[in-house]
Image (cartoon, rainbow, N blue to C red; front, top):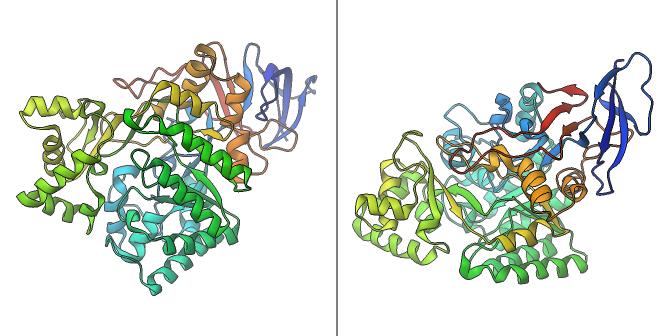
Amino acid sequence: MAQLFFQNGTIVDGSGSPGVPGSVLVEGDRILAAGRLDPPGGCHVVNCDGLVIAPGFIDLHSHSDLQVLEQHRAKVDQGVTTEVVGNCGFSPYPSGDNPAGLQVYANGILFGGDRWGWRNAAEYLASAEEKAASTNVVSLIGHGSLRVAVMGSRQEEATTAELDRMAGILDEALAGGAAGFSTGLMYAPGNCASRDELVTLLKVVARRGKLYATHMRSYSWELIESIGEQLDLVRAAGCRLEISHLQAVGQKNWHKQESALALLEQARAQGIDVAFDSYPYLAGSTVATQLLPQEALDGGIPALLSRLRDPDQRARLAAQAGQMLAQRWSDVYVASVGSGPAAPVVGRSFAEIGDMRGTAPVDAVIDLLLEEEGLVNILSFNQSEANLRALLTHPLCTVISDGFYVKGRPHPRLYGTFPELLGAVVRDKKWLSLEEAVHKVTGKPAAVLGLRGRGRISPGCVADITLFDAEKITSTATYESPCSPPEGVAAVYKSGVPLQ
């Protein structure tokens, strides 16, 4: 079996320990040795002078569920070898009896058409095994997708029979290879799930020993209450908790972050297995329907559009949207619309669009949703730099991309998260050491997921390896030009095979 010898680099092994000069010997898909080594005869030598030898990066929170099957390179070019999909309640299974309903629900985040949907986790993961050559795929089953499969887009409390069916499908998914369960409680129809529904489902997760990841009900006005709800749920169910993309949204809520972190630290001290993740940017991104009360989506996008066409309902929803907004309208930008990337509104804030059209920003939101039949994605500036630093440097934090594809301008995190972390955050701002940062995207997410043999440069581990120049690694993706590839990543190997 052919051997690879990564010679004379700096080994940053993913544990958080200081980097050391050395070499790494790989045979087949496994690491045989690491340290002060001489190359064995007949091996293929990879010169790593001036390079860091690190484990392949693990993106704990991604929305590339469909794109990983198409071998898109946005992540592998950053050094990512494993993506965790199915986050925020959105997964491409179970399709149930109505795949079209799942597509309508999830396409705003998963960026799909009308030709996708898998009946269960095993089918999806089999497709990933066959088609996802560039990255290892780890999948969570999404609560929203599960609910749509059983209940459609109705915003009602699940009946006993419906809850039993959801629990059965969830158990089947976890037994079939799903690594855990995610909720999106800010998104319809997950927003209307009761405590009983969530505890029942989370007990299935606990019994299977899998991970629970949540996009909470609020990150702004009710941030503290939302964390309290999640801690209550996992105390009742007994499962592990990962709070997705933690942040305090909107300047009036920035002061709440300290209390939020204190709650998590206290829960951890009490024995609750809780952690969180964050992306290294001040702005986030989602669908524009999040700017409206989620009860307006009862019945799905067609029902929403019907309500928005009714003058009385439109006025009521516009008033509620204005009260809900934690940012300023000048902080919220159009990332994409269904009609295409050349639309004149793409890249403009709703304050600007309102000025262009001679209307209030909230009316610009509603008009655009009507014009684009609900297909509008947004980018919003949410948090302060001081809060971002506190998140990224916290010992409970894993660094993620939360990236997803759009027909327009994606958030630059899709193409730049990991070089941004290692370049801007580590080298330039010096918020973290290189070893700490690498740990937060390798060994730490592997531990959160319970992935054995990944996230470390150590004998016996899978040979997922990223080589990068710590002095040059940089994200060139910006909000204005978000698809620009990174610099400074020299090579990426998945299971010992170079990804060219």
